[in-house]
Picture 1 (cartoon, helix red, strand yellow):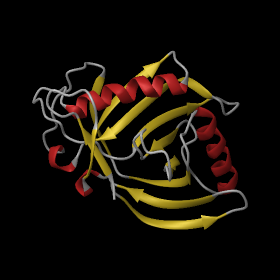
Picture 2 (spheres, one colour; picture 1 turned 120 degrees about the vertical axis):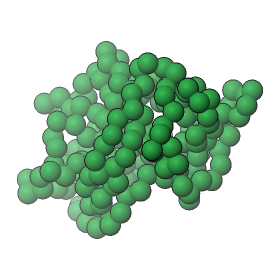
Picture 3 (spheres, one colour; picture 1 turned 90 degrees about the vertical axis):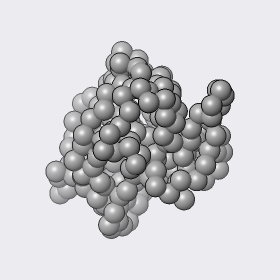
Picture 4 (cartoon, one colour; picture 1 turned 45 degrees about the vertical axis):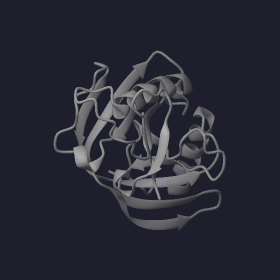
Amino acid sequence: MFLGSNFPQGGNFLVMRSVASLRWMCYLPVFFFQEEVTYEERTCEGGKFATVEVAGKQFDEASKEAVLKLLKYVGGTNDKGIGMGMTAPVSITAFPDEDSSLQQKVKVSLRIPSQYQDNPPRPGDESIQIEEREGMTIYSTQFGGYAKEEDYVNYAAKLRSALGSEAAYRKDFYLCNGYDPPMKPYWRRNEVWFVKE
């Protein structure tokens, strides 16, 4: 079950609702088990995504700023005034330096819900871009808790180690994904994705 959210008319809070059509589909998981990490290979569908780029700030601060902008967009701050609901996951593109720390730039993305894919509302905020993406095959590892930069860097290192030198994937970026609203304290789902070449 995936959770969606929208801003109710006249309110400034999130209403969480179950919406199966709002999920970002990933198919064909193949699980692998290594010493310190379990990972899977799966295929994710493409489509239109709302994205925000933030530079010059630390990962956690930049991610929070971008997510809040995207929440306003899907909550109704768009040319149609439509609360679209929120898809999962929130996907943050991280750019590692040579020492595996993260650069001070992120690109945060939400997949536009299926019913708005053909004609997504235009964002009211000019920093939000709508972009078309192809489907992709990923290597993914999952972990719980409230994820921060340190957690994503740690699990990216574990995934890199588990994949070894044989796997071909993009090394110039990886995706940090969160599936849960902030008010969910238990059984949280976070993932690191490496995009297979």
